[in-house]
Each structure stands twice: as C-alpha cells, then as structure tokens.
Image (cartoon, rainbow, N blue to C red; front, side, top):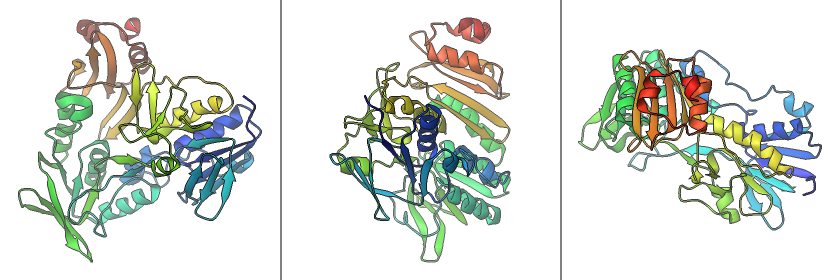
Length: 407
C-alpha cells in the first residue's frame, strides 16, 4: 500500500485529534485535515461532568495546546460540519461549501445525547450534557437552582447529581431501574453508588417512568411521573444515554451494526475501501471477545485514534485494548477494566464493600472478565493484566492472594 497523499478526519474530538497527532508522530508527511463541528479545539469529555461542572475547573483537558495543530501542519477547521461523504469519488462535503478529496478517511463523529420521547421532551430550557458549552451552561444553572431533577441514573446522571449537590441544590434522580448502574455493575455494586448518593442527600425515584416534562414557552416547570405525581424543578437534566452520530456514515452506504454503530473489523476498517471509524461510532470486532463491541468511554476514543494511524499508513494491526473508564463522585473514585455481564458473571469482592474501599471482580468460567478498583489505587497494573490475560483464577485467590502474582 502506497503512502496516502491526503487523510481526512471527520470529527475533532479525542478520537480524531489522537489520530491526527499519531500520524505525525509516525512520520507521515502528507496532508491531514481535521474537521470538527465544535467551535473549540479538541478536548476530553470526562472533565465536563467532573471538574468543570463542579466548578473546580474553568477549562477542560485540552487534547493539545492551541498552537499544536499549526506547528504540526494539521489543518484544523473548528465549527465546520461534514454533510456528505461520496465513497466512489473519495469526497467529503461540508456545510461551508467545501469539498475535500481523500486517499484515506477516518470517521470519528462521536455521539449526541439521547432525547426523552415524552410530551414536553423538546421544551426550551431542558439541559443535556455533551459539550464544553453544555457543561458551562449547566454549571451556571446548578449554581442558581433550588431544585434539580435528573432523568437517568447512569454514569453521567450520577456524576451530575454529585455536582448539583456540591452547588447545594436539592436533587432528585428518576430512572425506571431498581438500582443505579446495575446494567454495568450488577445490583450489589450498583447499590454502593445508590447508598453513596443517598448519604449525600440525593433523592431517588427508582422504578419510576417519566410521563411528561411540564412547562411551556417560558421554560420547564418539572417532571410528571407515570403515577401522576409532578416533581417541580428549576433545572431538568436529561441524561438517558448517548446515540452514535452515524447519519453521515449511513447516508454514504456504510454498514451499521445491530447496536447502531458503524461496522468495522479488528483493524478499525469499514467495508468501504480506505475508510475507517473510531471512538463512539465504531462497532469494532474485538478478537478477545469474538464479537463486535462499541465502547463510548474516553479511553477507547483516545486509544483507537492513536491505533488507527498505523493502519492508515499500511499496516493491519488489530485493536486489542480492553474497555476502560473511571468516575469520581464525592469522595469515591474508581476505575473499571474489561467487559462483564453482571447478570451471569460471578461477582467477587476483595476488601470492604461497606467502607467503599474494595476491588470487584467478575468471573466467567474461571476467567476474569472485568475488574473495578474503588478507592484503592495500588493494583492497577495487576488488574489490567488479569483482565487482558483472561486469567484463570478462583474466587478465593482473588480475595486473598497477591494480585500481581496471579497476573
């Protein structure tokens, strides 16, 4: 494969920016176009629901310094949105009338917040959280709010609840699940997060459906539950997940997976010649799991963006990293590695669940499928090795043995 003359990257988030930087680090001297619809230069998302929303930081974690792109001859176009991809012509069109031919194309278009399909779900004044500007607006709203209702008890909703409490707002979280985060962690570990928030004054309305967002042209008034009860609120945040931005890929004729992502192989290639996808939109065939997985966490975007550069330049290396994410809520910090099925995998706890200082493991047929350290920071490398190696261990070993020796 000859070296491409021009590589176009659609999406200037962490995945796209990491791909552009990795190309230059590998010595690529051709043209790189990094196109992003956000008006800001590339930034990482975790701080938006943590430091920025809490008020501890004004700026996010920028992927690179502002001068980096010019210094590395990366043509970065903020505030420009790709509107069409013509695969046959190898052409990307944008909303300014620009036309960009490519030899290789990377789609890194990320996700958008899901909406709530109920009456009032499109009222002005509803908040979502995805961008830096979203985070700054929501922080200002939390600072002025007396009552906040958060629809969604997942990671984003949980971190936002902690931030709203830090701003002294009265917070209610509504979700039809019985236990927050149970779909990822199971009810036992999910219960740790529920109890943490309850101790910090968050009110949960679990097992409840939202029937309507109430209000009018002058803004949102509250949330009506399926029971008919209305929760009044100054601020309503919709945090019911994110949807991959695949409209561009779909219109171009690229294959979509069952979970709505863009189907890519182990090397992050689509079925279209010289077209790749990374980050939130990539439904990636992972050799370790023997199936496609789509991961929306920041580490996946960063690592896939970095990894795809070598394949753009002629290699065909599979992406093998395990999923990874972290969260900080009040005085609890944790890291999660791997991919568990909490409904069927065996849960093993090492440490003190009640004190919120423990490591949770998930076992399937004697292999470690995932591990999460909570307020314990000494065994990160060992946990990564146990997960990546699908280590064969017993529950007793995980509870008592030296973890590095097991890895």
